[in-house]
Image (cartoon, rainbow, N blue to C red; front, top):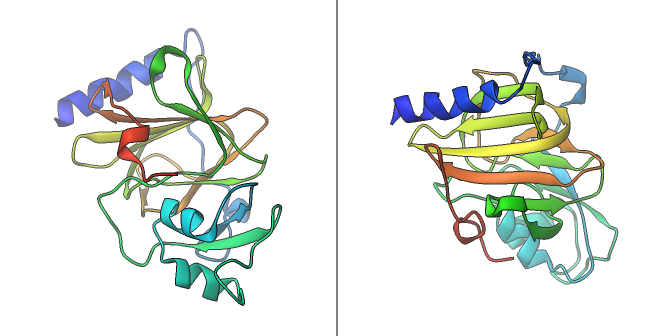
Length: 200
């Protein structure tokens, strides 16, 4: 399985045409001091849905944000999302936003507010963090060390470097003007990404 993972990573990097991807050192000043990130409430979202997609208890989310009740949220409100206390083998949404299928049927496109932090869907190790991947731009790939990989592309900023271990929920990058391209793969094979994520 390690060979398959290495092959997939090599294919990603080799897809850069004539441009050699540059590895990025994580800009420390860009990483939030608090262990978590922020989420801006969108129309139709509930506190329960937001908490579930980030792998935390709704009561914890309400407590951290000092909400008087579980319905005390408004469109446009910024909520602090702490790292999940318990790591899980379940994949979590890397960011909340408007969803559509990606071209070619591989993965999904998630449109979120520019600057929104993108979180590691599961714990793992950064296999790729490159500035220019052909067709994808700034891209991070996490190797979950069990055959699964997650791909995060069209990033505005990367907050991780190759070889770094990341825990589930930790920021790996930020959303730019383009929607986040997100895939879950088993080795080199794309999986049904939405089916492996919590219900929205």
